[in-house]
Image (cartoon, rainbow, N blue to C red):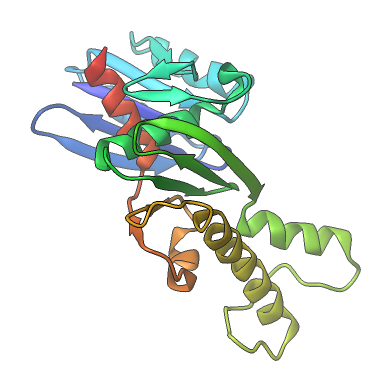
Length: 237
């Protein structure tokens, strides 16, 4: 039995998996009780994770699991793994979650160019070629960060309320609609850089529900793509 952990900026996603069992959950860094209970499963033999929430939160998770006799193997990016060739100027500086998501994407599409979109606290748009090369990516603030920036940087723009509308007629709706259009517009613009006619976008992350209806490109919704990638890494090792 393996325990897979995706320690993101906002939440911890986890999956308990063997050949017959897939149990998933999510919790916050402030209240990791659900993960702690999961870690009590006696048949866990390996823990694999990626952490982009900072060293202190990673250390806290490692310590919690160590008290249960479990050592975490924290994944980091490298030049090559699981059929992915990392073309970053400094491969080790690629975020561990982006690296795992690319590996997860490769498990779904091995003969297509793919745009891997992770819509979380930040939104990342990563290009993966059909032959397995990560050729580069983009990072922009996620939907909620965009809204917070407008609220913190202005005197009168609200943070709460609002919904997407094609023709917003109040300020809250205008903010939500503008932020979501910015996300969908960036995704569409980057996707159209891909010349291959059979390319596809893989969409994952907490804000995917809001962004999905606005996309006008071929896409596939895959939840927990980072955990899929960690599973691929664990199986390959």
